[in-house]
Length: 492
Image 1: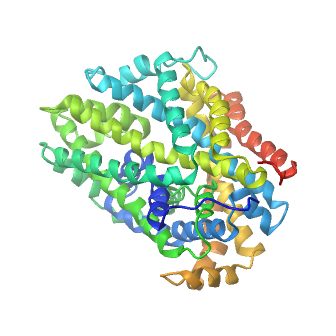
Image 2: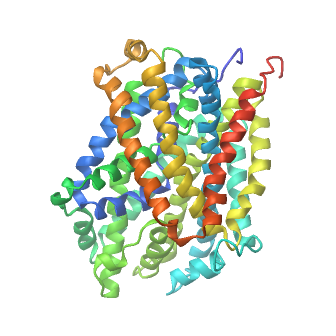
Image 3: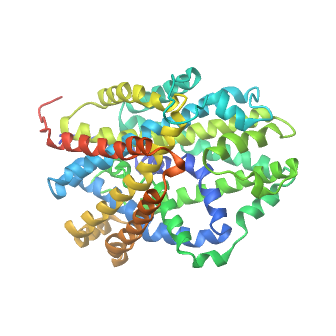
């Protein structure tokens, strides 16, 4: 382990970085749609229950473990049991896998930022997205060459990540003070514009109308836990790595509360932005809000550009604002995910931040080009599904069991309480030992049953086996190799 370790400039920069990692593209395009389709305003009840029974407890666990061990995920788990370093490398490897395909969305955003100046998508944004941006092929087997414009967008993304991470955590401390508040300001600008449009309140009502009858459906509660779990960057080593750069006397519990509430508040706020625009779009097109609502990429790259095109004035300006918002939301999550993986190398082999950033980018950039080929969208979709629905669920489950039963968790709670502004009760131990593991087990079983019942999105089995299970196996094998490789304490 290194003799000296970088630290955050101050507590504010740590919290900003943690919020930046948690708040990402999913807050804008996933939460509003999931909320509406699962009870509207009523979804907030299971959502906040999930936050306080799973999200906050796991945030405290990860931040606190990194801060106490002063190492990233691999060596933190290795300190509990030597063999568990393998698990730590696998968990951190999942974050590396995520950032490699996550950069694809940023590449799309760069292309759209350029085209928003002339509203190039015109009256057919769906066709523009699939044919002019993605150059989408007929299936995952028809790969083709990388799309030049997307390669440029991908290169800009990786360059930005390298420039941010090459100076280590102190550089990140400065960057997040700009990149975290900026998208909040931009979202506020979009909301003000959206609320002034005719039909906006129809969209807001569509978003918030509660359907309390759905609260009796167990699926709604599982969706709430899933949304909390994935939106907080849990189980991928991110918060353990960030926590490791805190001083030994740093406060953890209240920082985790602030991070969790900021993430959820941003999601809720973004819903007003999205649905005010969709309400306007519905009125212009003579449709119901339900008919124009789309999830995932369709919301950000089809429905929103359509609404922007039909604004009565300053269309290009608001197009630029929207895609800059996506870029600033995404870049914080992207460099946090890379840092979660490369921190382990710095801990074990004393490799400098600049070298780690350079080597990772030089390796990851060529690999990421598979996601900007003509079949890139399909491979992006498959890898994302398997890492999130299987990899992170298993990682979170194992993590809770390790800390809950193999680590002196009651003593750990007292360690956290010694410096905490908010004292942890026994509920925290119960959440880690029982509540979160049970929920994650149910989610995992449901995902497995669904996958073996029918192939995801009708993709051929060879593609889901290679891109899905193959990706998880790759990081498992690499984690084993990294665990077995001896530490080189004398390496500079």
